[in-house]
Length: 233
Image (cartoon, rainbow, N blue to C red; front, side, top):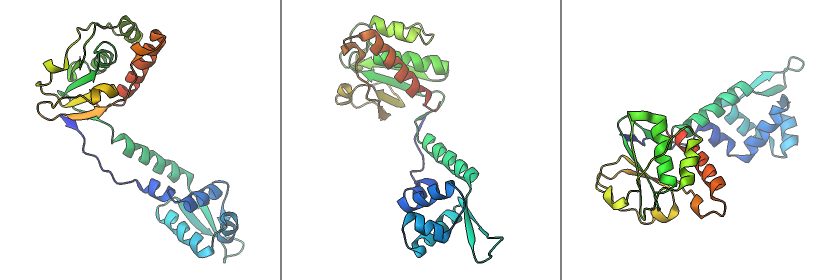
């Protein structure tokens, strides 16, 4: 029920812009239309090299060429900013497609060390977002009582948090589609789970260890809420 299949092929826009010379040419053309000899002078590279890279940009539809209406022997190159914006948006979409996707009916487990702050907050935030479409739980390798600042922090997100700390050993034989570890310590001691769920790690510091816990818990809740919003559900 957890979907992870996504193409790892680098989007065309990134392949093109990964070349420093093509990026230089694009920057020059962003300022206005140029002839080849002007681009050669601007980037300090041979004409044949500049022409080669211009062709790559033209083939991708990012640059167009037009004969001069004054001297037909000249060609002006133009950066198509609308196509540029479209290609950039497509690149963002390709990256978005790589984010974790959870189907309805999936089972998700959040894990941290104490199960007193980060993981119950994450559990509550995801459940609040998805309702009954996804089963959500949390556990810890060394459970402790729920931290009061965790309750306060998620209350600012409109959630009443009630949670009984759960030991990781009590859920390891339950089937989950996705297990998200929230601290570096617990990641190193994760047991083998029944069914081989997908494992994801979010490296989030323990707010209870900060000198001022309340601001730290608020930051943690905001971080978790942001990450959870990016889950494709």
